[in-house]
Image (cartoon, rainbow, N blue to C red; front, side, top):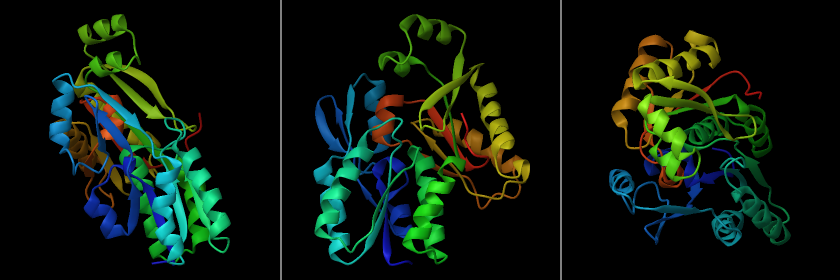
Length: 295
């Protein structure tokens, strides 16, 4: 491993064990469930099934990003140990946490002028953001120094594709993302919106697809269209799911059947409590390396 630290936020939605095995450190967002604050700690405080069951039962959620003081507390021990830092933030298209990270870095550079602190906007979210961190750990382990690794992340983050679908519009209505009227008609027509993340890191609805079966096929078709080498894709593939494992497994099975050269099996994770507070249950997200996102 290089003599520097790879760091991210808990919204990268991998497991505690995965982060530890790859030598990736994380700092936790926070969320409220019916007015009670909890850390977004990868399902430790409240297991993910309990979290999504609470939302289904009507619990209200609210999220808060990592603030400057939290970042200072997170970064300082590494700097005191003589380590440089690459910290990759949740997309600026959906969160302002990168501003807090940059403020913390500027303050700490005054105290540790000999250390390097890179703050990078992932332009990604959930396990796609996690997959970017996993690739960065590969580059570190291959011998890239801190400058080379930071440059690699910046140059390749828009090659990390994020495609999402939701099997229910209920939580998009509740969060004000679509109107009640659109939600009613969408429900009657069995609409499952297919979305992706654009080059500014924003979640953009792309297609209105009727029935879950069709949207599952459509998201796999998008992978064939956009992935490196198409059906011969040989990279890693991650999926995250918001309390709908069977739907995620159906996507994974199709991918493993179609893409014979995958680097290992498709890995399935939970959409964490921060992102899940906004999507609600029923969201499946697919992540892979491909053509550069230009939009």
